[in-house]
Length: 163
Image 1: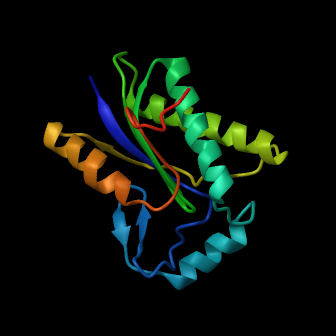
Image 2: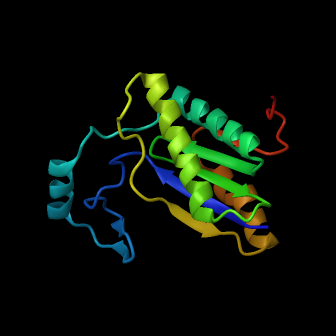
């Protein structure tokens, strides 16, 4: 059964002028590039976006609902102003790219409805995906990495799991 950690960034939250560098598709982490960041700003279709506290909690509930509807197991969610992590597994033969794409599309649709701004870009193009290697890796993500995030979090089996 595949298990992945997906990371979705908010639109324009990690630009090429980030002090830690930036990720370029198929090329990995690149050094800071202020000139490229400026060209990205000039070409941008929308203003930058970040999740506020209420929206983080909203997105956590949206992700849980998507998982339930598709019968995907959402193990944990960690949200911060600039990104959200989803730790998900599934039994179907569906490709990771399809699963991740459905999460992104539905989260974007629900944000558009919530903010009454259809067509606005909420999430950046692409997203990170890391396949969980083994139980040790899974436990590290669940017990160390994801709880370290300071925003809205949810973890399968937690007291606040609710309905």
